[in-house]
Length: 217
Length: 217
DNA sequence: GATATATTCAATTAATCTATTGAATGATGT
DNA sequence: ACATCATTCAATAGATTAATTGAATATATC
Image (cartoon, rainbow over all chains, first blue to last red; front, side, top):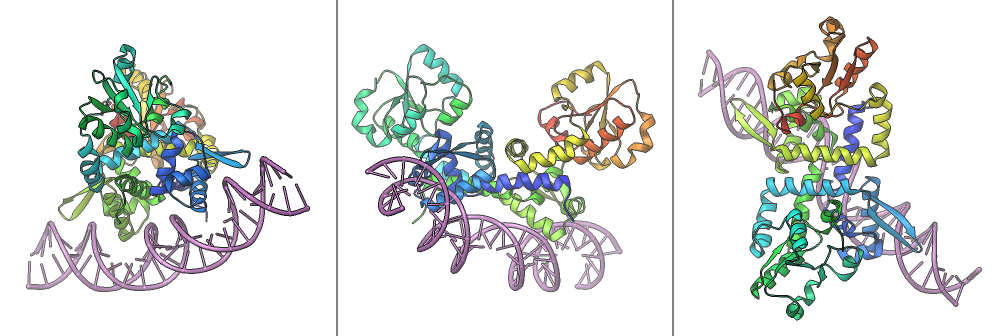
């Protein structure tokens, strides 16, 4: 006998949750949050095989989390819509708050590098208006090209130490990256502070700024 | 070699998502959203064996989604906090919007019984102030006892037809239940409309009303 | 049409998940 | 201390998921 409507609905919800139930797929979603990407590029960024990447993307697509289009030889994947970002953000908040292991990694790695309160999007919008802040995007250049905060300068983390002279020591720096736990913005803050700069991270990352409808560069 | 902090964080987030990845666990969470419950009661409400219910609850607890306490012989489970509700709500929105199978069940069953826009919490707060609406809670009495909307009358769905006389035909009725797809409120709306009453559903259910900090009965 | 590139599919293996069953554990009552 | 009730644990079997490998498919170029 078939199950009831309630069970069917819950089965559908569960299938979305299962699609999020692997670290590789969450990482793929974080990359797609920066913009549309091919399988090959995603595989390279995540160090997964192309076949494995493709399989994970199929699962994400079947769950309605990503969509794809053909662009010549390439199949380009993107997030289906902004509610996927909200879902990822809420998942993160529950895990941060309630999982001891997650809390341990946050304290042991992330907070050890930057335990200051990140700058809210609202606050940064005001600071940008006043023109009294340097905005630093530490993502790779191709992600910067796909979209960035207004007035942001793009210095990938690997180039940072070679480009310290570009910063005005009198201005505070706000650094941002792909998302709340993108290692690069934490490393950038640690490195800049070690050199005496006043620097904080932006809460979350570029995708959330964009989804909030805030101005882009 | 151990994985990096980013991978550890994603693994933690993924474990929360996996815990949501089964229809039985989502149903258990919906029941717990109404209030604290014992394993035995949850098993009875969901028609699962006690051992199976206990196993699913262990997974939910390990994922930080539920917590438990000993109350004499009984172990009482509850949702860890309100962000779990937000997570469930967002999961539902993504599934509603992006999964064809979920859309098919919604249209074929739920919308077939009530395709009117549900009443928002904000709107109901205003209508309650004016005193021009009847609020109907169709959950079982024990859930009603754990908490309900102000002024609500409790008529479980099985008793509804025997108690039509209790409704003032001049007043609109707003019916609510455990959540957005609780079958009982849809059936109640269909039955009352068939009898000529003016009736709509409340958006979502009691847990969301309570989490919004709105007054309780 | 042939070749190269990008991607997906199918088969296989290993790991993980789910439900069941019966034993073990904890609390209560006598 | 023993019996009863409620719950959890451990073992097992079957189902599902993940990664790999090689084949198949789709597109672009010549």
